[in-house]
Amino acid sequence: MPDDSSPRAPAATGSLGLDFGTTNSVAALLQPDGSIQTARFTHGGETETVCRSAISFFNQRGATLAEVGPWAVDRYLADPMDCRFLQSFKTFAASPSFQSTAIHGRAWRYEDLMAAFVGKMLSQSEPPLEATRRLVIGRPVAYAGHAPDPALAQTRYLSALAKCGIEEVHFVYEPVAAAYYFAQRLKKDATVLVADFGGGTSDFSIVRFRLGKQELQAVPMARTGVGLAGDRFDFRIIDHVVSPRLGKGSRYKSFDKMLDFPAHYFANFAAWHQLAIMKSGSTLRELRQLARASDQPDELEMLITIIEEDLGYPLYRAVSETKLALSHDEEARLSFDSMGVTIEAQVTRADFERWIEPDLQRIDRAVEAALAEAGLAAQDIDKVFLTGGTSFVPALRARFAARFGAERLETGDQLLSIAYGLALIGADDDISRWTVREA
Image (cartoon, rainbow, N blue to C red; front, side, top):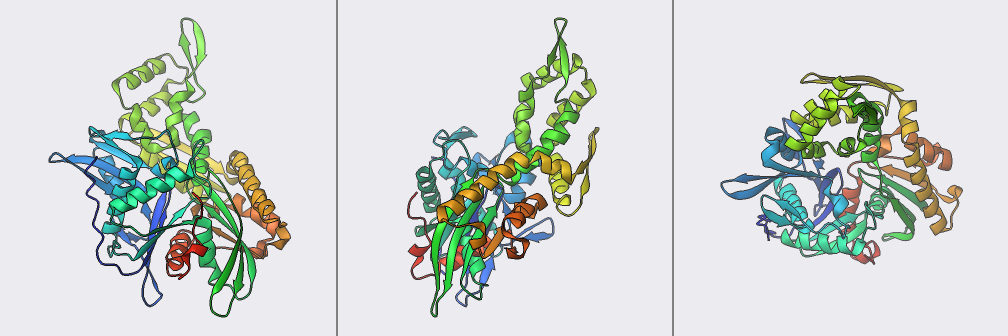
């Protein structure tokens, strides 16, 4: 069993909502006066209310230590070969095929990884948010991955949180938490569709809210989800703009025959840190041999430089900035220039929307399934609450406007709404009304 130095829980103070996300995580503590205190993280002189869901493991004086969030990225970039970096590991929560991973000679199970991340995140926040009477944690409607097992994910979550000293744990669907938060602003009864777009999953929930004299009443009507969201959109830019400029689609000569360059070398571009896997002598030797025989040697040399010089992180930042710019501009410049690697490309919103069209269609089908489960038509929905970072993508919003009418769409606190809703639900005397009843 790894020594993950999980923190002991101090005296209880209130209800803690934890939005443990694929890309980012948020924690919010409900205070006795009804206000919400959000965990804050100061790094590089800037304070954020979200913590990147990333963790780095490193050796120090014979012990395995961990950093999370932006500090994990710093640690990895400073010494990638002596550091084990993991991000988006939530995607393995419900995977039966994931048993453990070796880190510095020890086997770490999923619950060990999650405990190390959550414990460090809560203790490193400003102020520390370890103290809690009860913890309410969000879970997706549909976990990412092939043949996910929700019961396994719940068991792993409980084990991880117990390692952090947290014993009273309640599970709430993430879009239900966002719906509860949104319902606080309602002035009359309403049927609400919440669409939560994260990094790895897109989840939908339909809830009928009634404003009772004493309490908010709710009737859950449907929930659906699909295992794709913002990370997939980033990869579409990588696949169509970046990879072709690094040799994807090129050919090489072998025994007087021209062969297609092996596509598997670009599979690791699905996540920037996976490029470190390619930084081995054998892989680099193979790439250099292919580059010498290639009809695009310069492009492949840039790919080799990105791997050798650990340029994956700044490259992905450039891609994310381009995607963000396309949220408010019709076209954006993807510009990357480092260590002799130069990638300059003009990306139009029209092209981007064409690339993500298959993903948008899968999202459409999930929304249709939610309406069918609730037995409702689009006109029966009074309000649509769009939350999560990917909800800024114009093509996504346009789909909902076309289906439900732009006047019914509402947004706000896209990155915080789930954590806020979870914390508020934790104060409900009958919390079972909101919790997941089956794994």
